[in-house]
Length: 255
Length: 266
Ligand SMILES: Nc1ncnc2c1ncn2[C@@H]1O[C@H](COP(=O)(O)OP(=O)(O)O)[C@@H](O)[C@H]1O
Ligand SMILES: [Mg+2]
Image (tube, rainbow over all chains, first blue to last red; front, side, top):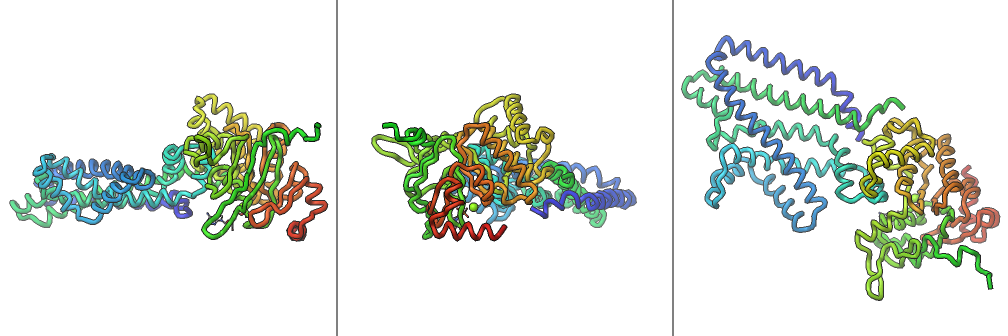
């Protein structure tokens, strides 16, 4: 808890520095690439980046929903559902994202379920990160003091009502930083979808590299785009943390 | 024959009947018998670990009991009638019985992400089904009663401990309980903040037909406020009586020891 309290207030200079790095990095990247492969490669690479962003955004949404459902089921559902949720978490944490991707894209069709590459990519990465996210959520929920549950119980609030109105809003703040890490993990893992025919940023880079062999320029630009995207995620999560933290501890110093 | 005082002919508001509570090998409540009449104010005192908090927690149905029966206004709390006998209560029955009781905790346990008024509106809206306006009116009235009319929109972190505890009292009252439980509600407060909380309880006692059970270390307050004082020792009531009897002329050796120790500490 004390760590959260210092987090939101202490993070503004850090966030400023991050923003500076992001802007400088991106501007510098554009400058460098304008000398070299900028005009030749950037449009194609940005098209790839759009696919990457699409997979990352869709995957993040799936991850949050999957984590929420799995956590709720693991903590509060009747036994069979609880087992199902545990099985999901262990299965998706215990095998690699690549194998999960191949299962959804190559094995499921043999069982009669065909997914588009985009759907398979979003589902596989989302479910993979969601399994880790469920652990994050469970930790944050269990860290909410028992007295909160008891006060709610004494007021006759039901279990789900208590979870939704009392516990989750408090756990939410503690979840934000680790979720930021997971979103960045997810972003980096999106390069796997090139293996199931999607033309994401990594795929475009390889394709351009094979035809032009201007390796340094291409992968220089690619590196900068990935870096800019992940810094964007970090900044967004910092802002969210500040907002949520302020709501929870409004005017702590105003006693 | 009219020997019986009014209270003994009525159904007690709270009745513990040979109630036992164990944690593993540790017996925390040992075949406890306790009747509390409607409107009666009972102070519970005793050494640390004697089971005082547990009495309130089992009455609030936060803990299950291992033996015996608790009745609230004649209705079993942890059991419900079925056929000829009693079976363990289901969730619905527990919720119904809990609605008669309110509890205030040592550490307030306010919801930190909600303002004072929201703390007092949440349960009336979601449990009693009150509309937003009605819940707000009720919450504002109660917060005014506990002297916090100007703090409705403050969050717990913006309030002093005494103010937080008064919000907690208002929050419990918003559910219109018939029995209020106070568990050492001033123990976590700086001494200069105890008075404002005790004043609220005092007012509640004189203005309402509330039945109150309060665990306290404030012997002065217990003496002045309670109709009856129960001295707990090792999960039983070792001695009970009017404040005058218990404080003025304690019979039991453990009571004498305890009171001596408390007085010395002051
Ligand atoms: N959840 C629990 N698990 C195990 N022991 C407990 C638990 N709660 C209370 N106890 C034990 O029960 C005894 C009575 O506790 P309590 O009712 O809180 O005492 P008091 O309020 O009189 O100080 C203590 O010895 C305490 O350690
Ligand atoms: Mg206690």
